[in-house]
Image (tube, rainbow, N blue to C red; front, top):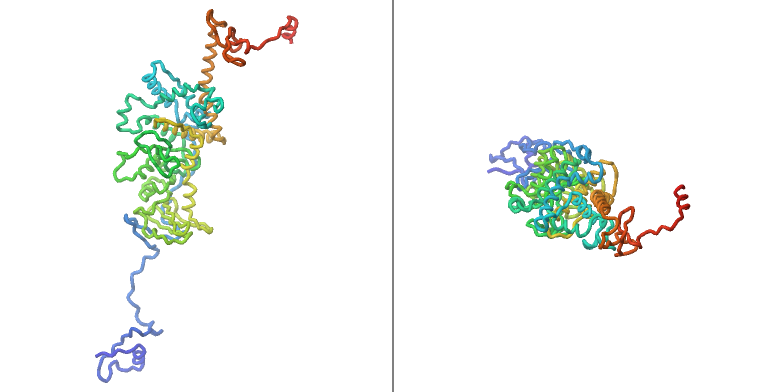
Length: 546
């Protein structure tokens, strides 16, 4: 039977060179008691077998639900990200736009071209002749004048359409440009496609009633401007309650019903680079592809492979989208929903201290989890930052959050600018509502191009008034010349048996007249005629001689 000795007894036995067996011949087991303590001499004992150590330089990693491996990083650490050379220049007009723009009107015609106006003229005339009378006609200058009146009505808001021509609330420029009855007549027949083939085209294209004109407008927007480095993507809900199968209801918007458009804007100039409507489920979209990814890739397609950065909110942002854009030399910056499967589960804790930041990295992207206040976190996904640093302030805000706040507002500011002088008016036809939105966007883009081409700063309201004047000038001058021509063709005195009314109405209302003015050829009654005093021949000759 073995005897168990304490550590002190074993050491004393070894030092006294005693035999390890006692008088009874029993073995002595040199095993420490569980409650004994190691002395300093025990450090000389052989060390325990080595354990596996973590690889030098490795960081704690975590696997998300979808299998994405995230590595937690220290704030301020340079991440192993292959940098993409950013787009260096600011947004600027294209070479073609610079060559063609010499006035505000030419700037506007870069987006709503003469060809588009001729198409609208053709289909409007077709509808009017089919429903009203065979000799109905509207010239191209008259259509441009119609658009100028629409723009002026957006600048000068009045309660109803008729008030724009009223004596108290009316705009003198509108009154002099086009008659109210003619404006209403054109509005009644305004069409943007062939009404005879629309039903067939609508089976495959829900936007068929204005699809061709809208497509030309978007193509012109893409071709007329080269956006800068930062592009913002968001949605626009254009207010409308017209009947259509793709009308949207969004409770968080000021106007809850409307037609939704996906918009990409240049951050600095608020130029609308690309836009298309949301028409419901798209059968051409590949199965398994998110709607948000499809929208972003379609909006950014003309601007890929240049080193641009796209900013968006959490509806669009995802890790798969960031990797797809990165393969096209385009980076992403946006808030991300913490419930997405690619987000680490450890970031969902709610007991965060205010002004703290966590940084995670994975292939091609970084995730910043910042707590601006206690128990609240903001998630920012970025592929443009190779290092995440915090400010030297009380809030210690990271640079990803700061950059997002600077670049997120492009579409929102654009929508605010459009609404300020919007041409929107009540209508029961959704193509007319889309046409109103197209005029608003074209006028905003024309203002950006005009200022960039001429290097001037002009208030937008002043630009719109001058643009409306230039749009209507040709028709007003043509109408004035035609009226003078008709007056000159009239006889100097009324025909026998007929009575002419005074055309001046300066001091009268409906007086009869028999003679015409020698300058303007209008019939003038006695009240509206200037009386020349009698002169003798000597005074008349002396006046002529002077």
